[in-house]
Every structure is written in C-alpha cells, then in structure tokens.
Image (cartoon, rainbow, N blue to C red; front, side, top):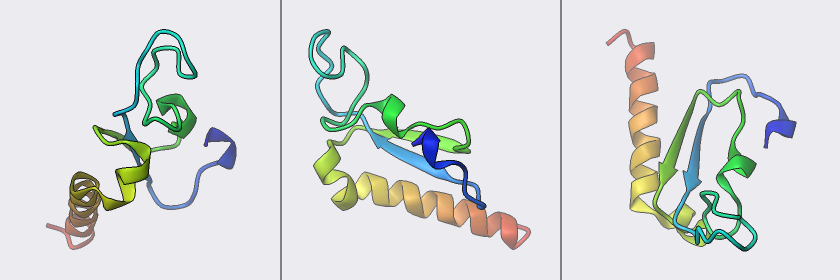
Length: 83
C-alpha cells in the first residue's frame, strides 16, 4: 500500500487482525486478517490506522468497521463545522 502514495485528504486505514498468527506459515506470526498482513495495508502517510478484530472477507459487512467509519466522519465534520 505504501507504493500507492498519499492521497490529498487525511486517510484512516482500517485493518482486520483476526487471522492466524502462527509462527510458521504465510504471515510468520505477524498480525493479519487471513488474506493480507498488517504491514501490507500500512503506510506512513496514513493519519490513523485502526486494527479491527475481523477477518478479511467480513470487513465490508462488519458493524465495528461501519462504526469506525462513522466515528471518523463525525469527527471530521465536527472540525469542519468549528465544533
């Protein structure tokens, strides 16, 4: 993801971390969502990165992920409105 480069607006990354963490295997003990590792979805230009206890395939349907998005959206709009 770091190869993509930053985009204009401040960006929050939401990463699933409910994958296997065996010392052996494709992730060698690194946090992951069962498909990609945390380091693969990390970049220095992310303003905020949230780790959600969700597997990769359920990230789009997760209530917790939806809550994180709404919370960040509300925070951004509160700042924009001067609140």
